[in-house]
Picture 1 (cartoon, rainbow, N blue to C red):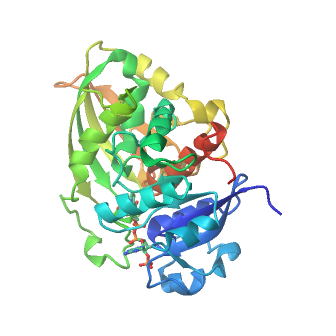
Picture 2: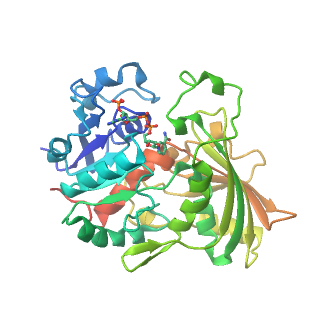
Length: 361
Ligand SMILES: NC(=O)c1ccc[n+]([C@@H]2O[C@H](COP(=O)([O-])OP(=O)(O)OC[C@H]3O[C@@H](n4cnc5c(N)ncnc54)[C@H](OP(=O)(O)O)[C@@H]3O)[C@@H](O)[C@H]2O)c1
């Protein structure tokens, strides 16, 4: 009998669900024992339910092929088989909020990839290198839910992962204004070129809801725990444009920054390459050894060359130079379905386990 924690994946048949399955294939702490999706997939084996929709580069792991898919809405049944769940279901925001809390109330922690709970005041939204202390609000959330071990924790949107860690590394220089444009991959919409042929040789200057998330979510990451809730930071002011580009995986951001205390270029690079947090200190299984790499070549970071840096868990930065209007500008790149989605959630779960929030039932 394995002593790994038993994990369920809600929305296991989708793009992010498949990424969870792939990332957890050989995980030293977690074992996928339950997969759940809509009523359309329930009752089929995982292999049958996914059919031709498998979108990962690596083959479907043998261990999940024969698992019978459960219905996400049968909460008690799914919860009974697992220690905690990852959530990647695509439902309405209200439905997601309700179902994630329903799982928490069965004393099953939920680590979610969804946006539904990102602004629930006592739900921590965490990038473990940036704000692991926000997990402290879990105690207050449990009181609200009336649970002993059940809670919901979330990770932020994929779009911010190529510039929010960078700005965090530069916190001592007090960034006050940021202008960012993100160039976002089609997998962020759960798509490949096969199922979104209009994106070949195309650019679409609109991603619903993305600009507000890109401007606001970093402020919540930099917020403080006060009276059992997260109070968001007020600076830096961020303005964003989010553009869909013909790239399969990898969100790039081109950003301009103004500081209160203008640093030198050397200081900025020094802080980037020396930036680390709890995942590196605890040597968590999915932690990138070097979270942020700085690339001096003028033509980097490039999606094809750099998206898989640190197995998709690291951030690549380049083109840092002084600007004529702002103080500095740079380009950042991160993997949207690994660091930006499933991988970010797995790292949150590892941090939660290491800190004793997730245990065997
Ligand atoms: N793709 C990304 O990079 C990314 C990044 C951050 C956040 N997200 C968010 O993550 C979620 C999943 O995204 P995705 O790209 O993986 O979507 P997806 O490929 O469309 O997968 C959706 C999953 O949800 C299940 N589902 C759909 N309707 C359901 C219902 N009514 N009841 C129960 N299960 C239902 C589907 O099951 P069936 O197969 O049975 O239909 C499938 O497992 C979304 O909320 C999305 O906004 C995605």
